Image 1 (cartoon, rainbow, N blue to C red):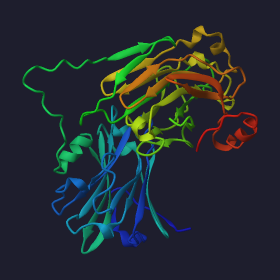
Image 2: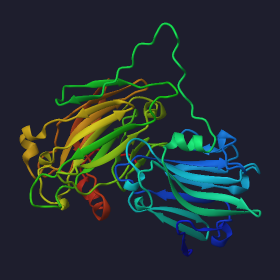
Image 3: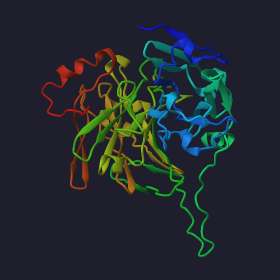
Image 4: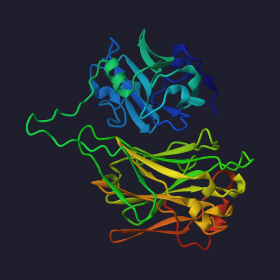
Length: 421
């Protein structure tokens, strides 16, 4: 195994010193973002450090440079082959930007890892490097004296992704101005719609314009139940995804986190392990709004929270779990009151369904559920489609994580359902 080298903030050196001159090589970003949604981008700049060719901004909407020298290999990964870059590209700057609310000082301990055959380099960074900035210029690769070098920048930037584009000389596409006459109908801002009963539903139209929201963001929140124990308030936000072909995929952090730009087009942003009355816990999932088209038809997602036996005995209903979905300026909350359900007051009921989301090419349909698993049952929510109707049953396969994961095979031995890989 190659030796691991470590870069310090502000350090500059030749790629050849670490063996990264062997092309291509990969950059993986392990970002401890908590509840933050982070977008990554790579800017290919000319000798004036400007984005003179906007095709060399590599990000979620443009995942590969024209020459193939930079490619988005995953939600937070790039693949570089500098030998393919044209002479006009003198520098590559890798950036991070917050999509939504938050500041970079909220980052946890994070790392950028560069790897090539026989070479590994790590650049650790953290929120303490920054203040109230919403973007970061993280790493710069640049030519000097005919060789490629690296600069561990880690410099905060006050604007978001749009501001970075403008800083490097690019232009941000704006929606076309409305026609002078007749005046357009005012856009309805739903602010927040709250759904509390299973029979309630709310539908949102998916926007098709250039300025359409890039993500559907779903957050599960819960609070401390107020008892004296500090270790029984750890829930897991789980997602069951029903595909058009009837198969289901299971998503949870950290071992089945999914992906946003490739299948399953659903990404879990990370596990949160504690909550308090002053600081409710939040776990976040991002859904690609184009998931229906990308999967070949309408999909359904069931969101649930789960409390493992290992986390301590607790009534999940006492943690008041709820779900909020954000799409642009439209916010819909599923806030079923579990405390009114006898099952929800039992400490040996582990799974609570907090919402059902159905997405096709035109709209998002959201409804609360209120269903729970049976006492002592590890079964997960399972979706079935009959025509246009989606039903939820609590007989899906058990899923465990970490060292308990192998136990699932024995528990599921007689269960006919299986999740697709």
